[in-house]
Structures are given as structure tokens and as C-alpha cells.
Length: 112
Length: 114
Image 1 (cartoon, rainbow over the protein chains, first blue to last red):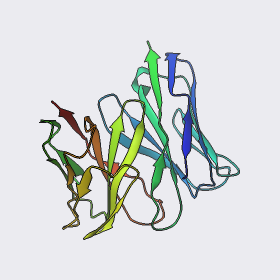
Image 2 (cartoon, chains in turn green, blue; image 1 turned 60 degrees about the vertical axis):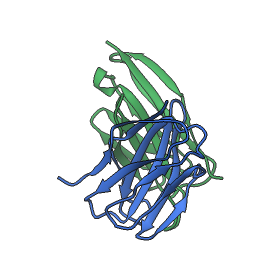
Image 3 (tube, each protein chain N blue to C red; image 1 turned 135 degrees about the vertical axis):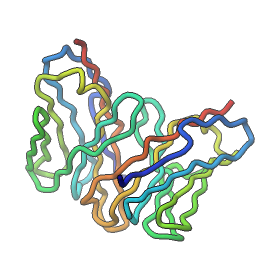
Image 4 (cartoon, each protein chain N blue to C red; image 1 turned 90 degrees about the vertical axis):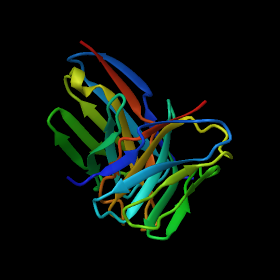
């Protein structure tokens, strides 16, 4: 079945360094969503990308959707301790009966 | 405030017992979902429902059962047939359709089998 692969699984950075997580699908996606889960918390919806090559920004976060709609990335500039958590991408597998396919997430830790 | 409520937050169960996790939403969402989260495994779909009195199996439905008698409620029963039930269970809801809307998650239930 459809899979969404996410790398890296873990990332440790020094505060102020940049961070990027990558998401790859085995098939073309209708859209892709990104979620953040703080330690001990639940996933919270961040953003959705729909168009081929789309780029969206939220303050220090930049989200990209690949031209072929099979890959996506989340880049955080100058990480802060508040960025700690696990970032999940999730792709829609198409159709009204479909549902989101989640990647396994990238766990980000930030050393002050 | 609209939201999705899961209860209890922590649950302990003896082996061989069934247990039911509650999930209620007041967002008027048609679709509801149950996920299981284990360390390093991401979110795995157990069951989902897009309309009252109908639900579909997800990737890991064995040992679980659900009901959807009301739009607002989607309880999950972890049966004694579930061989490794200790996990973090997340309920979510969304507007139905083509994935154009993000999922809203509850705060989760941590189930431990003792």
C-alpha cells in the first residue's frame, strides 16, 4: 500500500542552527499536511500544501511540496527551544473515501 | 470552545479485560479516527468513520472494535484479543472529503496493561 517515508528519525541541533525534515511518498499525493507534536502532547495541524512546487512560510518555518507531488520538506531557520517536538508529514491518498497516511515523524531536540 | 475530548487520560487494565476509550467532539465534524502511537512508530490507523452507523477498518484493526451511534461520539474498545495493547491512543476528527482540512486531535489516552 501507499507509504510515506520521513527522514531523519531523530535530529539533535544546537539552538540557533537550522533544521530540515524530509518526506517522500511512493505515489503521487493529492496534498500533504504537516503536524507538530510536543513532548507528552498530541499532534497539532500546522499547514497543508496542495499545488505542485508550492512553498509556504510560517515565521521561521518553510514548507515545500515537490514538483512531482511525491515529496515535501519542512525547514526551520534558527531553531529555538520551543521548536522541540516531533514533526509529522501526512499525505492524502486520494478520493473521498481516503484518509491521511502519516510518516513516522522526525523528533527534534534543541540544545540551549 | 469547540474541540475533541478523550477520556480518561490514563488507563490501567488487567490482562484479559476489555476496556473502552471515550472520544467526543463538538466540532460538527463528520469524520472521526482512532490512531495508535508507539515510540518510533508514528501514527497507525485503527478505525475510521465518515458517517453515523458506518466505520471502516484501518491498518491495525485486529483486537479493537468501535461504534458510531452519534455524530459526536466514536468510542474505541480494546478487547482482550489485542495482544499488545499498551500504547498511546489518539482520537481525531475532520471535515469529510478530500483531505483539504487538517485533523483535530484529542489529547490522547495512555493505556497500560498490568
